[in-house]
Amino acid sequence: MSIVVTGATGNLGRHVVEQLLEKVPADQVTAVVRNPEKATGFAERGVRIATADYNTPASFEGLFAAGDKVLLISGNEFDKGRVGQHQVVIDAAKAAGVALLAYTSAPGSLTAALADDHRGTEKALTESDLPYALLRNGWYHENYTENLAPVLQYDAVTHAAGEGRVSSASRADYAAAAVAVLTGEGHENKTYELGGDIAWSFAEYAAELSRQTGREITDNAVSVEAFAGILTGAGLPEPLAAILAGVDASIEKGELVIDSGDLSRLTGRPTTPLAEAISTALKS
Ligand code: NAP
Image (tube, rainbow, N blue to C red; front, top):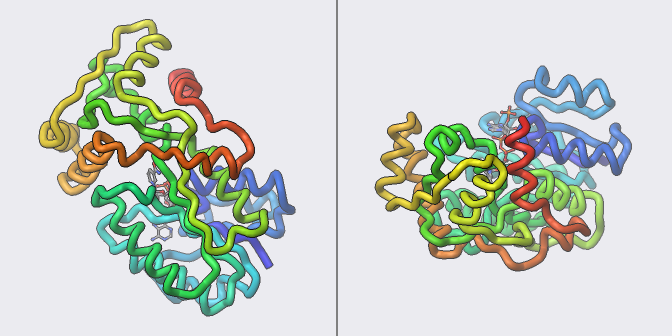
């Protein structure tokens, strides 16, 4: 019996494995990775490494065992049919008889196209009759704080979210919630709406950046069409630019405000303030 984490060499997956290692012996943790070379650090610490790819169903055959608790971290290959990819993991988990399959989804309130794969995966999971947990992760602080270069170049936060607010939290916060579910009891067939304790607007984000940098960083709200054009102009493929601009349209409608309190309740502590994530990013 093991706690199994897919996407373990991704940004969120690394946080999850690190935090699991603080709670359970390493030999009870399995990291599912595409490229074992990226997981040598985990292997050296005693984590079991399993190599599998969502695009290759055979690679998941026999990977899970009865009683395992599995975290399926959603993939990032938007053009490869993520629902089908995730179905591969669900089918393998079902064949093995795992005790829990937790899935990193998107907020139930999010109507942007980005959420379609998550709703499709949730449907596949709830119809599988497996014990499931839906971790509907809100936005990461890092979506913004790891992309400060253009903001600092133009002294402007450019977005298409108007006065909309975002309840973001750090990846480490969402990882802590996943670890609480994987190591705790009573999470079967539960849905958690996860987000930061404090929702902020882009004007407030620009003001906090100004405070921390000592520069005047302005709030530059543009239309969704203009924003998509700015993103493609910066080199993003058109479909991805449309998806990201669509998320801003959702933010303006309030769809990324999460006020359930589920995240801090699961982790037992307040979520990381955005100001702290900005400060960390500016120091790196
Ligand atoms: P990430 O760093 O891009 O990690 C994605 C993980 O998925 C990586 O470990 C990657 O493997 C793995 N993966 C992708 N395709 C795969 C495949 N075909 N087979 C097996 N593994 C595959 O993203 P993250 O920051 O950890 O976030 C986790 C997920 O949350 C993302 O994939 C995305 O679905 C979603 N997301 C959420 C937010 C948010 O704000 N809530 C923001 C961005 C993304 P490798 O390590 O081998 O690359």
